[in-house]
Amino acid sequence: MLDLDGLDGVVDAVRLAVVVLASRTPSESGVVEIRTSELGRWLGMSQSYVASVVIPALRRSGVVSIGTAEGEFGQDGGLKCEVLALTKAQDVVGHPLGRCHVV
Image (cartoon, rainbow, N blue to C red; front, side, top):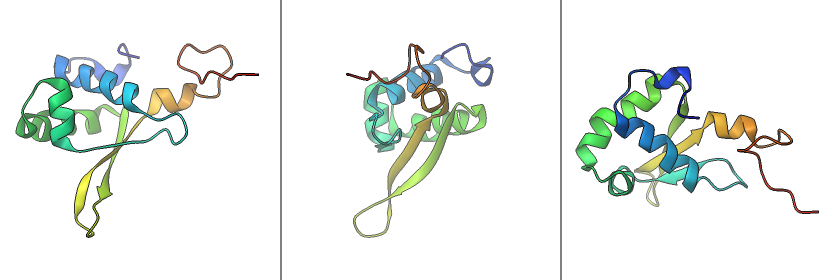
């Protein structure tokens, strides 16, 4: 997943963000809701760095689709992130990123 074309030349924080988002993605929805500050804690970086460097680079990469999650009172509550390679692989039989199906 880290050798996708969209990640060529990006800073390591962006690559790490892809891994973090993929690991936190629920298999049921394929979309993880996370606050910028929480993503920053997972990356070991400030919220402002994540907001100004990591999120824009993720959006440009085409590897992660990022939308806005609405908060309890209608305000922007965080991010809705979908790691597109993970979503594509979910139902591919034998793919290492695919869902585990218990029979």
